[in-house]
Amino acid sequence: MAKQHGKHPDTALAQNRKARHDYAVEETYEAGIALTGTEIKSVRDRRVNLKDGFVQIRQGEAWMMNVHISPFAEGNRFNVDPLRNRKLLLHKKEISKLGEATQTKGVTIIPLKMYLKHGFAKVLIGVAHGKREYDKRQDIKKREQQRQIDRVMKHY
Image 1: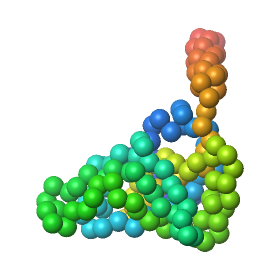
Image 2: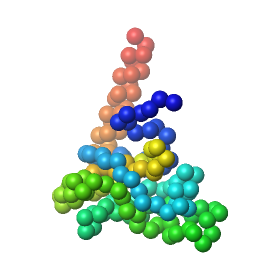
Image 3: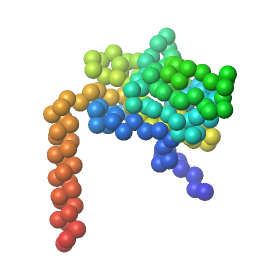
Image 4: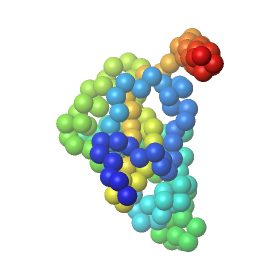
């Protein structure tokens, strides 16, 4: 199997599909996640929902909030709260950059994708600002125009 250098694997365990529609992502970071034993088993079963998730910087640490990881079926008493806050593993410089970025009005940090890399769960987080309705319409218009151009070019 070929190694991927600097690329994010296409086999995402969970993806926030609405994120790029609702937000304009400026920068992305790869972060590890501090999970319990039953949580990682649920992540490998693809039982993760990133839709309402966001990241907060508190006391020099990055925390992923409101991400739902379903309880593991055979986890019984070892299962934890599915919506608990999870610590993200980043370098201090990255955390300080993220903290500075969120000081700007309208900027937030959102999880985009969760995947496994060398057996460890990773999350791709993005520094983003919310799109307005007219921005979304412009994106749809550009996409439609590009499709039409591709159709015409296909016939030549």
